[in-house]
Image 1 (cartoon, one colour):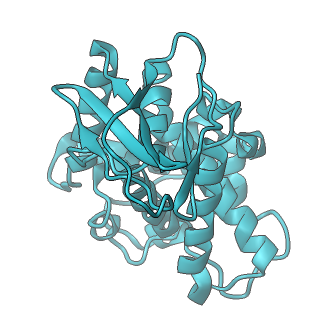
Image 2: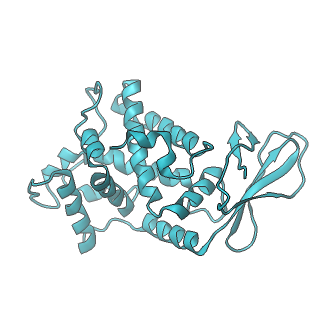
Length: 270
């Protein structure tokens, strides 16, 4: 079954899904005369989304009928995205300590507010102030990365690869920004789907509930790779982040990418 890639105002059916996929083709509505702009996303009943596009003068689209598993996982991920970091919560304190232990095994942490945190790339002595942009999930992402791909994590933390800039990006703060970028890209809080990337990700999420965290790890190594290729400095960080997002979107739209593990850049992780 084919899907849709949106490119420069036009859409072509090139995305392939497995036979067991919950993606289906649909056709409805009438086309306007220009034949160049994509149709607006439409909502078709409870739990059923349809991303419409225009191709050769006809509105077409794909829709996702969320299975109970998909709906449950999406609800859980949305909840994670809405949790603010709260330094007074014991579980949040423990998560922060766990991040330190995973980052610096065997090295004693002197306190949740300490100059030691600057070593990891936080802006000040209290890392909780840097979580405001993306919330507790950004801490969870860093911890997942540290535990799942420790070699890549440590390499990026210590800036071991390539010719590094004299003004490098702060590792931990960059991680928070990457979480926020992915949240914006996937647009999971929207009631109606506005991007095809979101629809693809929901399918991937149905295969692996840790898809968001895996995508985060891929995004981090892609960002660092582009940073090195550009010979970037910290003033260019936002531009590097934009190009990282574009690279992730291109890979997610590839025909044979049905899991995060299928993304070409996943091979950068170790």
